[in-house]
Image 1: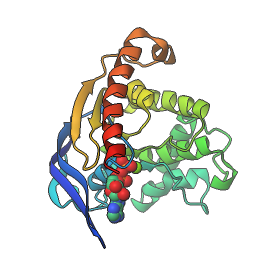
Image 2: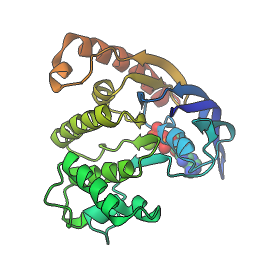
Image 3: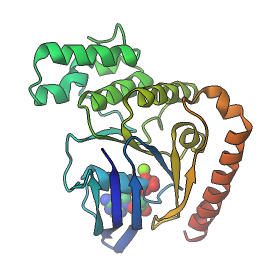
Image 4: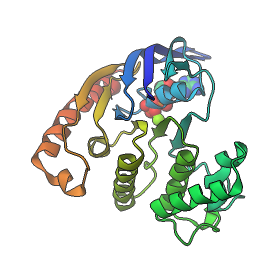
Amino acid sequence: MSEIRFVGVAMRYPTRRGEVRALQEISLTVPDGQFACIVGPSGCGKSTLLSVAAGLITPSEGEVRVDGKATDSPGADRGMVFQSYSLYPWLSVRRNIEFGLEVKRTPKPERTRQSSELIRLMKLDGFAEAYPKALSGGMKQRVAIARALANDPQVLLMDEPFGALDALTRQIMQEMLTDLWQRYRKTVLFVTHDIDEAIFLGDVIYIMTNRPGRIRTTLNVDLPRPRTFDMVGGTRFAELRSQVVGIIHEESMKAVESE
Ligand code: ADP
Ligand code: MG
């Protein structure tokens, strides 16, 4: 059981000119094994929401619990993948993936077994001894995902992990991630501003309001699993897309008007 539960979370950032209200009244539960996506206009508080779950920031009100345990500091139970590549440049691909296992003092044969499996699954064969600077953006993010999974976290928190990639690479990454999820069934909280990405990956999509971010709508994605790319061209996909686009458009207009 690995659920993520937000209870009445609000976040206000103190600034010199007063407070920025980033989040308000966020209460939601991502049940065990669910892939939940958060979408919303830029600046609505998506990264803030994920940072609270990660324990990187302390909310002004409320709390986040993973399996009932308060997330008041970062922990190995929560694997994180961000947009910017956060690999250790001085470590090889294999040692990047094994980093958390080394910290936990997992014996070397077991470390090697796990990293080899992830290297194979993430199609990084032949790059185990390469250093991050020799890798493409997509490969770096595959290493980052492998590293997060190697720790065997209870939940995965992902903040626009494919945001910096070109459209084709992005599609391939989405396919790999959905396959991986099918295999490991982690509870995932995935932030994106890409609507197709949210529909393709998610079981459920939380659409946020303009800042201060609240959950405006919860949409169940009733596309069958496993997800395949031909679904993106399908009728149901198009219907879901137009629903989400409509709501986000309204919220983005509000953002522009309040500027
Ligand atoms: P998103 O990820 O949806 O684009 P963020 O969570 O990054 O949104 O930011 C939400 C709002 O909070 C934005 O208006 C942003 O400028 C503000 N914000 C984020 N971090 C800070 C901070 N450390 N100090 C002050 N304001 C912040
Ligand atoms: Mg963000």
